[in-house]
Length: 100
Image 1 (cartoon, rainbow, N blue to C red):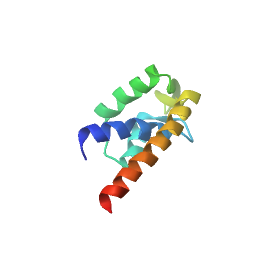
Image 2 (tube, rainbow, N blue to C red):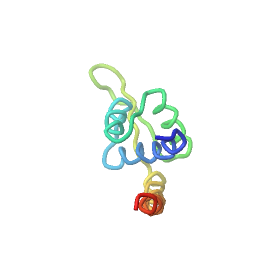
Image 3 (cartoon, one colour):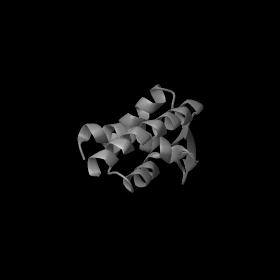
Image 4 (cartoon, rainbow, N blue to C red):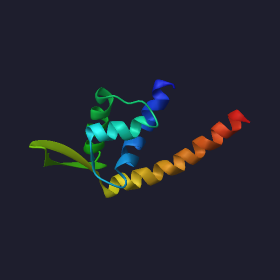
């Protein structure tokens, strides 16, 4: 897949992976990788950007005697996800036209 096209989808995929439950980096990678390949070096800048845009917040919690950073989608993040659904409907129309 084209790198620029992939870049546009990754932020939304990360938000979607947080829609139902808070999560941590490794688990987000596992969830998103079911749809599109993503590495740690790609994920963490996305998470920082989403946090700076106030689409996610973070908190730490102990797990097996270590602190683990969790990411939680915010109301603004949920709104962004809803807006993206409209964008994807338009993208789907384009793909349907191309593939017919």
